[in-house]
Length: 87
Image (cartoon, rainbow, N blue to C red; front, side, top):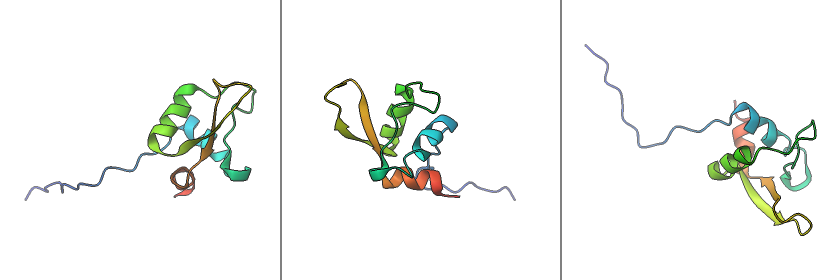
């Protein structure tokens, strides 16, 4: 007898990419979950990485930087913390 795939209405849990995970992990030990604007090599975090994390709810805008209004300062959300700490 052939196996029939079960249809569930629950979406598959998204998993952060390597770059997204690396960025989100840096917020775990920061006050308020602040996420860095730059990577460990001094390069600006890719806007694509930031946008995707925002879209998934793993990060959220924190505040506007008055000196650099085009820089989006973000913080880790509970969903982001869960995405990088679940096994």
